[in-house]
Image (cartoon, rainbow, N blue to C red):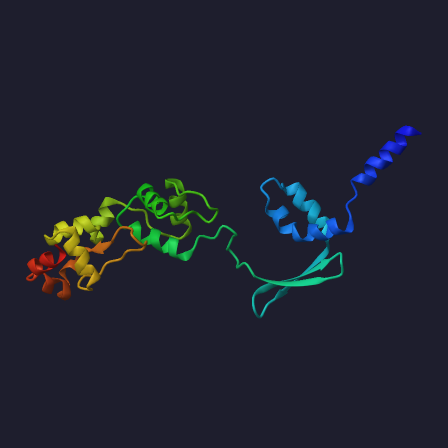
Amino acid sequence: MRRPLLLARATASTIGTIDEFKNLAHDLEALWNDPQSDERTKKRLLRALIREIVVDIDEKTSEVVLVIHWKGGVHTPLRLPRRRRGESRGHTPKDVVEAVRVLSRIYSDEMIAGVLNRAKLTTARGNYWTRSLVTSLRANHDIACHTAQRQAEEGWLNLSHAARSAGVSNRTLRIAIERGYITAEQPIASGPWVINKQALNSEAALKTRPTRSVLMDSSA
């Protein structure tokens, strides 16, 4: 009889007090976000706390409506945006897609991946960009692949090549762009400029050429 008695005492000593259970509620968020809390632990927590979740669709607002029924009797309503057809959880932001569209005029997929990584822009899943990932993104959004022939035919230039074509320094051309004399695109902050050769021959751009020395003096 001694052994069962010791077992009973050991079991009783592991049962928490009421205060300990109250404190557990305050520590729930820390427990959930703890790196050592694996998926199995989180599933056990959900089964212990939630009785059921009722899901409905609000067609007018295009939202998913959830009502969480907790085992304590409290109900928590939630509204989440409804995922559109063809849209996945790994949806790439529109500004990144547009940046790839613009950069593909002058850069290969490998170079675009480098630009995105230097700008600390990750994929929808939080990964670094690679050549193959950029290629996949282009294919999914009907973005043409960069080729030297297409670039030459359409007249796309980066800042250095545009400055050389205009016969000015990179800094002078950048000042002209900032002043609005020349139209250019910079899809990523602190990233490369994309300029069409026709922009260098626009009326506003041609007016800057006679005063090029003035621009260069002001940029010194």
